[in-house]
Length: 370
Image (cartoon, rainbow, N blue to C red; front, side, top):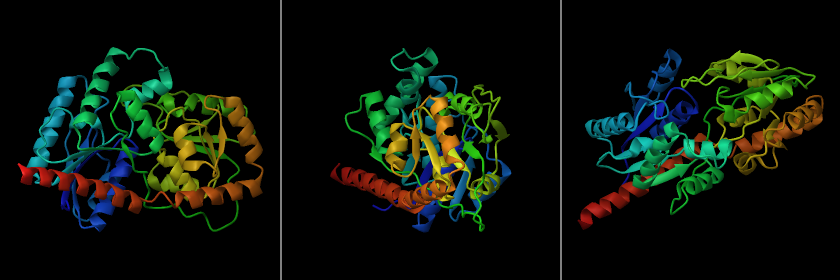
């Protein structure tokens, strides 16, 4: 069975929004219409314009809580029921949930594919090791586990994160890895000059992104390190920068302009299921300096410089050595851009649609057998 209409959930806070729009465009190009159900804060005018420009997309601003800011299990249970009703009301063939917790304990009446873009269980393992889960994490992790077990298919953005998910939840099988992709590559500026600085971007308030390491490295560097992204999160988490230059949140156009100048791009993440900002930098031809974590090794091995996670001295040393070495920067930037060419939104959409076709066909066969 070929699904003709898919309900895709998303939020407008982080990278999931970008993922959802790229996926929706790819599905539209394949004749599949999308109902985009947005949870949490509504899209801003620029985001809303980008969504409504996609052919066949219906934008639904649900006002429902984000899975990671909801106050209780019952609140998320009600959200799942509302999403199931939305799927029924819009007559979709399949559902694509951006968080497994949204698929738990609700009768959707149609196949559900969940993507584990990120989760508290894997975050806690990466950041806290074997320490017990705090109470506010425990019920969320339990709900995510139910969503994973009840879904018709589970996806992850990298094989490394798929394995981490399987281990964290004791899954019988490993989720399927479908690499994220970006549709609009940043084109490097026409002149041959390279930005003499260092650039990073992401949710700086999330300690897993390594803003503290970035800031400590900046204090050891001879060139400026600019950091784009919010310092305060919806959950109240904060990051403080004293040596790195905080740029705040940048628009897509501002981000493209910054990357087109080809600064050295760095990420000091301790935990990163994929890293869309790294991909965008690679598409622009930036040289990459990344923390040596499994996902970055999977995606960028041979096309980036790696430094030990949590080591600001090593990060600063690598950046201080690379920034003035234009020949090496150009070679690394070319390698990163070539690698980025394998992570396209078109490939992502094709792979995701194949999974939806598969689960829809299985459901159809089951219904016929019954």
